[in-house]
Every structure is written in C-alpha cells, then in structure tokens.
Image (cartoon, rainbow over all chains, first blue to last red; front, side, top):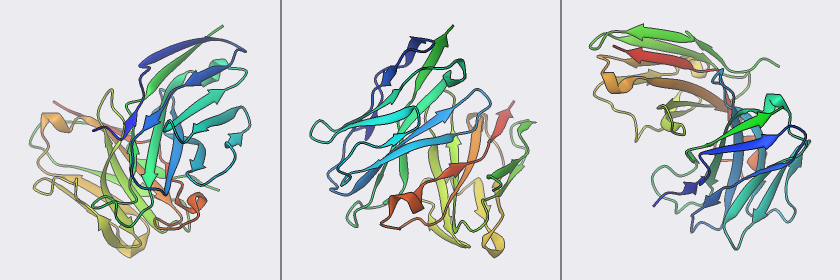
Length: 120
Length: 119
C-alpha cells in the first residue's frame, strides 16, 4: 500500500488566488512528520513546511499553510495569493519516527507529486 | 549559508559505461542522502549516511551502484555499468541529524540534482 497519496496529477490556479494541494498518508506509527517540497523545472527540491503528528496547531510558513487532519490522515498544503513563480511540482512526504517502523525507519517517503500551474 | 552542492548538473553516457556524481552537503550536517528520481515519480532513497557510516542502503542496487562518504563530508555515488533504466535525476540531500526527536533537525535540504541520460 502506498504510504503517501497525492490524487491530483495537475492543478491550475489563477494568479493571486489560493489553492489547496491534497495529500493523504498511511501509517500505524503514532509519531511521524509530514513535509512538503516544491520542485521547479530546474530540478531542485525546495523544503516548504513540515508538521509533526503531535503538533496541536497547523503549521504555517509565509504563504504556505498545512491543513492537518489527523483523524482523516490528510495533510493538505494551502498556498495563498498564488504567484507565477509558484508553478512547479509539489511533493508531500512522510517520515515515520517510531522504533518499530522496520527497515527503512526514519527515511522520507514521497508521493508522486502534483504539478501546479499558475495562470496570469 | 551555502546549500547542498552537486555536480555535474547533466550527464549523458552510453549503456555499460560508468559514471560518478559528487555531493557536498550543508556545513555541519551529519546525515547525507542519495535519492533517485525517475521521471513522473517522487524521489526514492538509495542510501543514507550518518557521518561516514552507512545507515540504510536497503534500496541501493549493489551490483552496479556504490557510494562512499569519506571523512564524513563529501560523498560520491557511482554507477558501473549503467543501464538504460538508470536514466533519472540523482538528488543529494543533507540534514543535521537523522534520528532527532525534534523534527526540525531532521529536515532534509536538497541539491539541484544531476540529470543522467543513459543511451
């Protein structure tokens, strides 16, 4: 079973509008972290924001916020006031922190990504 | 603060040739990662180092891939011999720690990657 699911292969948003990129995850580990990265066409993976499973409040970083719904196992990225420079691939990733996560514990597992296109 | 440096940015080789990639992590970062990203997919971890020791290489195809991190700083990833299916972007990342309870210390910062084409 996939640990990270991003159901939107591509999204379009008008410049200055807000957009939500979906991410659902699957884990039995009570301690984990969720991360979002942006990958422009240049190829570099740029860290945007993270959320810990025990964090009480949703994470925010500038125009980025993470809509964390633990019971639904979702960690959607919200980008407010979209800019042309936001056009890129966006990846959701998870890191399980527990000792019983088995081989590969502590590694970052990525989804397949969502391609966001901002329209002027 | 300088980011993760990788070279070369692009490499084109023929199958059965060998190739090497270089990575210099962020200063002070103990943990270094190599990922393979095939077109249309998310990155997949190949190998993870803590200082100069291997933490996880369970997904590294050891018959053709090798990696080392001498002196716990720079790292090289080698493919010998290359196959057509090795065409991908190879990303290097680093983090302060890899087992810290504080998630902020585990954040991985990536380089620009090396785009490999095997013909």
